Length: 122
Image (tube, rainbow, N blue to C red; front, side, top):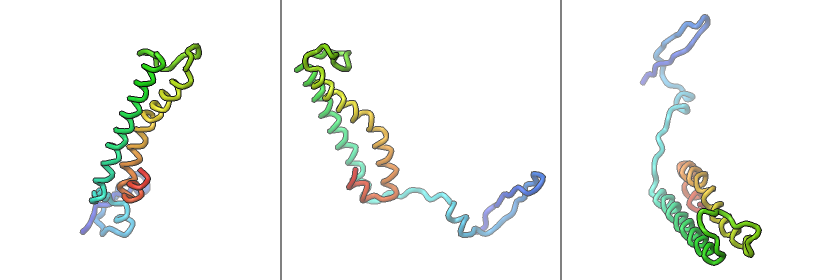
């Protein structure tokens, strides 16, 4: 098998040549990711994270009714009696939401390299 190599030499002259791939060329070639049977467990992790996210949302809803904080107010004011308790529940829920995007990106990218540790630490 031969590949087309394009090189630019002096004075912007383009040189085309057919060469056999070397070891370096093989390293630089694209290798499509392959899925292993363990990737089914990787798909289970976002489902479990969705359950945690829904649970945290219910906790915020319960805290809203308990402390009397109505929508669209995101956090309780310092003048409210239990502002610190409600804000802790709301902030915990917001932390889950804020970290989901990077968590899922790292989960997918690391599962192609090392599936078992991704499942363990996911």
